[in-house]
Figure (cartoon, rainbow, N blue to C red):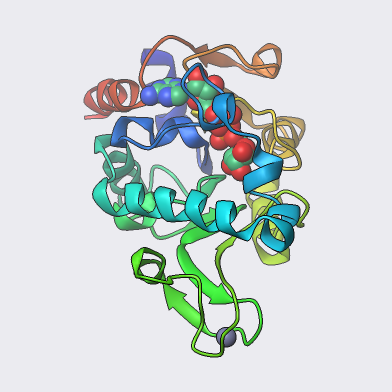
Length: 239
Ligand code: APR
Ligand code: ZN
């Protein structure tokens, strides 16, 4: 922890990169650890363009369940500490793969959502925007125009939002410290950014319960520790 606290104090442009492991302590399951969502479900049947077009009932039920989970859960102390560190000028931005909007709910301002969000929805026929609560209503997927309403999330088979990729590129090129929190780093192109930052001379830190394929490139790796605890302990060392 001392090393991570020292890196944070020395750095001029710190970027934090989060994955689903950032939200498990809020009660939101991740995807690939032992109890992850993709351990029992096939992402291509539920979170893909195929599912949107050919498997709408299961698609709607899958996202309705995730949205219900989102509404009943809260950002945890780790999310709040990152927002505090941003206010204190310790971190510059958060690049997140998460679609739960918890960084923003915790107060972070500069959040780059690589995979979109399920906190906002839109009709695929007329484009009308909806709040996430629409999905927990009776017939929550039916627009006033009769069209199908979907979350603003990037589905498997879709490309990432250009503006988010451009911002993440810029942040990864300017970072002198790049901290990964809670990601298996198995999904591209998101997993390109930690390496891009390293290539641009940043120190790379990976905080993840389990080993990742990128650990060998990192300057510091912290396994077998919960992110909320790690951030709280580092915060004590920053005071
Ligand atoms: N503290 C530290 N690490 C944790 C914690 C925790 N409290 N909880 C889980 N982890 C770790 C797990 O060990 C796992 O390696 O977080 C990692 C999460 O990895 P994934 O489940 O693969 O999630 P992520 O890397 O965000 O997945 C990327 O895949 O399905 C797509 O679009 C989806 O954005 C997601 C993308
Ligand atoms: Zn419509």
